[in-house]
Amino acid sequence: MAQDLTRPLAPGERYRCDGCGNVTRFDVVTTARTRRYLHFDLGGTPAVDEEEVLTATVEAVTCRWCSREDALRIEPAPVTEHPRGSG
Image (cartoon, rainbow, N blue to C red; front, top):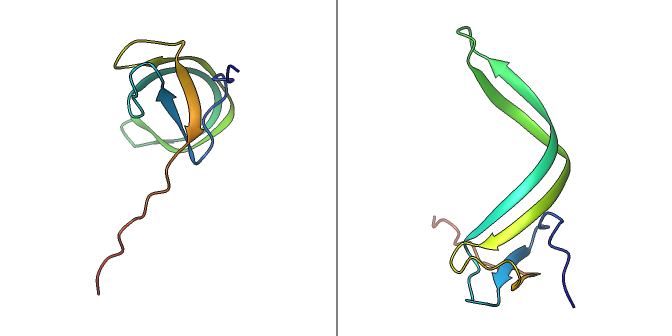
């Protein structure tokens, strides 16, 4: 059954290419509607201080390693342990 790849990934999810096994490199084309808080310095150079994504749609996902679009799926990402600082 084909998955809906047109939604952004939720926390704890990742892409996997069943063609080559890639789980780390993908080209993702997204259309997003955002609200940004811009902060301009005195010289007029803007910086984005805050950004809220109001809506987002993924248009295409392509495996960077094998260029396939037809072998991709979303799967749960493995839980990683973060080492705690000593002392």
